[in-house]
Image (cartoon, rainbow, N blue to C red; front, side):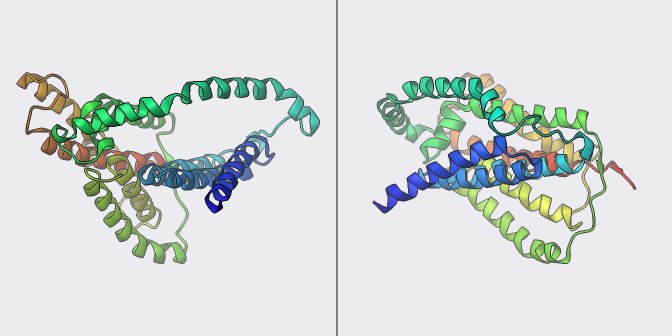
Length: 307
């Protein structure tokens, strides 16, 4: 009974926050509510038994994305911070078609998801049957980095393209203000813990929920914290090690695919006995690439505009 009450409250709260994010008049309040929405969604993922997705949602969906939105709002002139041109009853009347369309899409998706449990069980059984040859002990990691390694490669490419697009649109950032003493003190304590937990998530990803994206997101959070307090040196695209780390995840993934193809197994089809070591190397390269890319997306490069 208590679990049903908790789950129902979470479902009601997340729907309320979703509506509030869209219709609140203040852009700042909307961003704050969006961050709260991400944290609540992380809690829901935890309730669904997916702690790896909960960590990724809290770090990326709420933390890093919320930071990007607040930074964008801070650099937007007050005169350009557009607010809804209508309010009250007119606002809900004009949004009626969008609500109807959303409900229709929700109904279509619900019909597609309803028969999913049997199909999901079949997929899980198929993954478990071939787990011995996957090179890892966790079925999710086996699917993402062995059976469907293409998915993870494309995710890394999307992240790389997003970084390149942001770099072209916003090549420089204003100088950050001096860090508060409280933030400086906490960063010295939290950053080592974040790095330690990130390494643990990477190591546990082969047998439990975790992996490159969760570890990379946490490492990025630690790097951003240290950079905001000037405890980490400035980074820029002109640094060779930055270019190597940003491009290293996708490049190493592609090299592994070409290597397995050269061996005759096929692109990203690992030969027998090679799956475990290759997956570990891919995870390490992807973790470092994700961490530095997310860090640069939030704090930008060293080409600062003074004044």
